[in-house]
Length: 473
Image 1 (cartoon, rainbow, N blue to C red):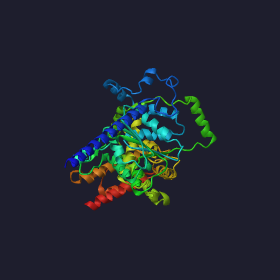
Image 2: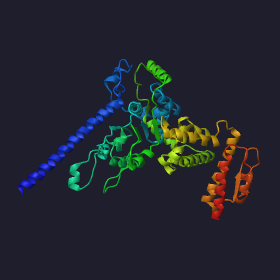
Image 3: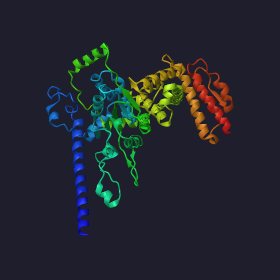
Image 4: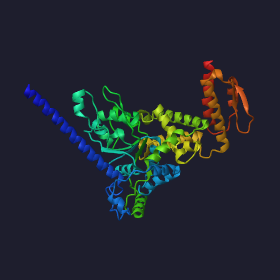
């Protein structure tokens, strides 16, 4: 009995010693990562000395930036939306050919979505990703490189062994893990095992971490920047891959013009990395909230609904894109299209979204850069947008869209509360008297909408809605 008790005591001591070792190593790693993110001179491999980078000596000696006071935070939040966009545009002076990528990064921040930079080694993925993470001040950052041996515990936090042995509960030290961060930088994320893919799927998109016999842990992560050399393999990874909102493949600089641009940037910046940070995490949260409250008029929503449906229909009919499954229509992608439109309106400081935001920002919701699937998808989206929102569309034609959107809103209200709503609908077409009509008369009045580019597609949606109302009576 004495020998058995002694053995048990030795095992418990060894477990506690191992736990202390992992906690000390985790703290050191996160302190190092925090210093890399917060120090403008230590973040980059090719960073120059503080005096050459024109960084104040105080900042060079104290890389850990002090948190903003409440007054400073209010001043940051009070900055205009345009200043937020202009501040991040500073990155374009240092990244040649990454203008679209930087726009995607802005939208990822405002939509609380994630972004992936994918491409062959040497294409320039890690450097822009580190710039993006370092551009946001006062953000809690989790940073790691995924390998074939990375397990979910390495992302969430070290488990506490003695709690599991004594109480049978799987408890994690999540203080410095991905669950308690604002921004995450996951490099080479597709190199991980299948078990990691399942955990990433729930952490990144469901914002929870599933634990056996316990309620799920909530994840506070706002956005993640991921890098990969190639698309991951396997059905489990495919689920993660298809849910990444923003994807960019850097183009190879293989032309004389591209080299000329690169040389100009090098001469302009003297090879220095930009002084970071550029924006504050509180400003990101404030603008994200504004995006959630952004009003989308009914006409704009009707146009977006047709564009989204037609785009996904054509993608499914495409021989290659249909098999890839990357552009299948689902509620998540539908919501992403709307969020991108609202985020674009927020960046421009608008009080509501309009038709121009549909055409200007929807392309950012598709893969950009040197991506064959993305190029094919953009070609389809351009054709669809040209059908309903041609570049030379006039205000009178958009006024017709407004009228059709207003009618669509009335039909929706009638569908929801038909018994408590009047049976007449109004239709105000430009240049025509206001029309009041019963449901059965609407089809005839909708036939008056002619000569407007794309209006027939919206009229077809309304005809179907009116017919369904008749079926329900």
